[in-house]
Length: 121
Length: 107
Image (cartoon, rainbow over all chains, first blue to last red; front, side, top):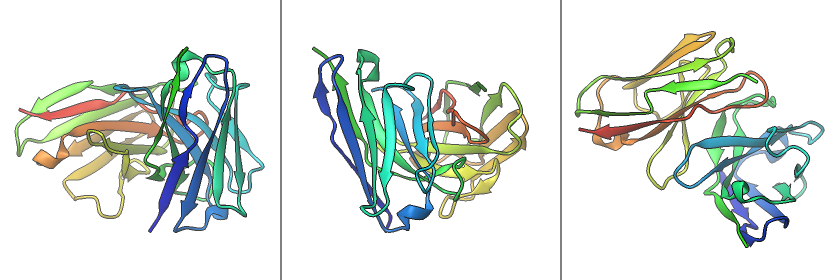
């Protein structure tokens, strides 16, 4: 069974930092592109960042480029999102999502349960 | 960047009705289009990819069509368990943009 479990969220002050983790199991992590998607409470889905299966290629939404860094450790079956210089508008539930295809441009066939990040003073 | 516009933003229909949701891309995306279903308080679920390919386990009352810039998701006979918000997503290139969502309710 495919499982993706996010951790590392919480309450942080504006300007602060967090590192989100997504531990996966049930599939060959090193063969799959991975992504982060966020959802503001009561609002829609926003793709945030993606990373190729090997980690060589990374992609970011304009809204987070320069503040967020995606990475992965294929030996630990874990995806990360380092989020710096947090703003109130970064408050959201953050999901990790598995790419369905091997390539980086892919729909997402499995999602984690989501982790809440709240930016507030 | 390519924008994805869904319509309507919400709809209310009766059980058994045929429901159609549209998604328009501001530029052509070939058939690199997915549809997701997000039930209240749940995680999004992939329904359709490559514009019309049904994901394994998805009921056959769901179907997708379109290519290029105009796409549709159809529920042939709306069921109570289909109450959800539906999102389209382009994945031809980054950013992998989602549409704004369509909330489907039972009348």
